[in-house]
Amino acid sequence: MELPFAESYKIKMVETIKKSTREEREKWIKEANYNLFSLKSNQVFIDLLTDSGTGAMSDKQWSAMMLGDESYAGASSYYNLKSTIKDLLGFDYFLPTHQGRAAENVLFSATIKEGDIIPGNSHFDTTKGHIEFRKAKAVDCTIDEAFDTEIDHPFKGNIDPVKLENTIKEYTPEKIPFIVLTVTCNTSGGQPVSIENMRDIRNIADKYNIPVYYDSARFAENAYFIKLREKGYENKTIKEIVKEMYSYADGMTMSSKKDAIVNMGGFIALKSEETFKKATVFNIVFEGFITYGGMSGRDMNALAQGLDEGTEFDYLDTRIKQVAYLGQRLTDFGISVQKPFGGHAIFVEAKKFLPHVPKEQYIAQTLAVELYLEAGIRGVEIGTLLADRDPETRENRYPALELLRLAIPRRVYTNNHMDVIAVALKNVFDRRDGIRTGFNILEEAPIMRHFTVKLEKA
Ligand SMILES: *Cc1c(COP(=O)(O)O)cnc(C)c1O
Image 1: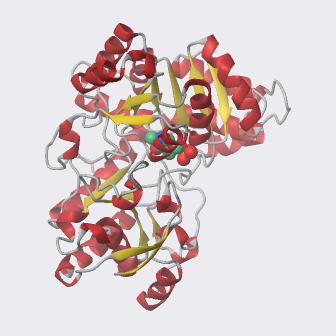
Image 2 (image 1 turned 45 degrees about the vertical axis):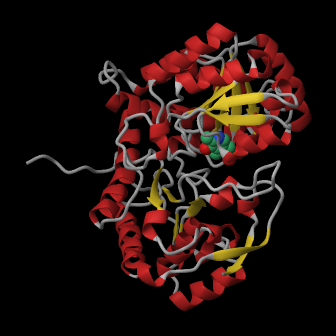
């Protein structure tokens, strides 16, 4: 008999989580103006809001923290992280930042000017926010297959080379300071980019002399999918694949809160000394001196260790199989989720789940609230609230997909939790015909409204 799958780690420390009653949840979600970001964490039983900064650090990471060097300049923790980044990713230059969006803020300050165009694969919300904040424009060049949740394409994060080249020709290369490739592509559902696509993008970029930066939060999960799905990579280690991925990049911005399994941190890594020097000025202004830039020494040490552990096959296999386990259970219940299953989350198709709720009433948000009411599970809307308004017309942008994202924190929950999530969603599914109205906006911020939006029942 084949042995069943089990986690490649055991538990050394536990944290209590609290169950609640439906009555309590009804009161709490109303007080939170139906925005799950406004709930207190002790009002949540299973928290799938994000996989960002919510992972469990290992014994080795905690012990690395004790060796953190808190010197203002030239700390050994900085050099430790610098050499890990060089060995693992191949970049000579790096700047620590306090998280991923800070890396974007620093790098974009050095590279983007008003009127610029940044082509990419479904830019992440903070990336788009930082582009639009500078009065530049993000152009989505993701392959069309990404927008059909039923097509089983192995690399739905890929950029369409034809769309990319047409964008470059339309706007001219002078308007394009860089191309951004998000690995895995968060916004399109944690979908990977193939090595072949990375090579194609590199060739186009070289033809027009445009740098390519990878938005790298989930680069290790991307490498795992390459190993499983791309011909010629099945026998390579994750670390070998990662090295090759970055051989096609000029630089990267990193949210270390994802695949590096730390609770806070980020960095920029670059091949060009010139770009590094420009970015350094902004890093010092916004983040801190070059050798700590927004991170303490102990955090840089834990990050270096996390980068190493996060690119080990056994860990990634445990992680991605847990996400797929939840995806399969939901599929077995007849619930439509994005396929193939993403690396860090399962995306439930809210339009198919709640066909009676009008799109003007925020379908995926309605489903997120229903799941919370059912079992105290907190997911997040990836739909019209997140898509925000068009910066020029101020009209709502209705995305092709309304998704409820169930992001799975790394090394935190067991498959028993996955079972609770699956059954809770099935219970909502069984009563879906009774759910016919959603929400109206009471109050919203001018950009990135989803974090603070206040809603009322429609
Ligand atoms: C999380 C994330 C960011 C932003 O990083 P923070 O650490 O949250 O600031 C940028 N890009 C992608 C793809 C991300 O997933």
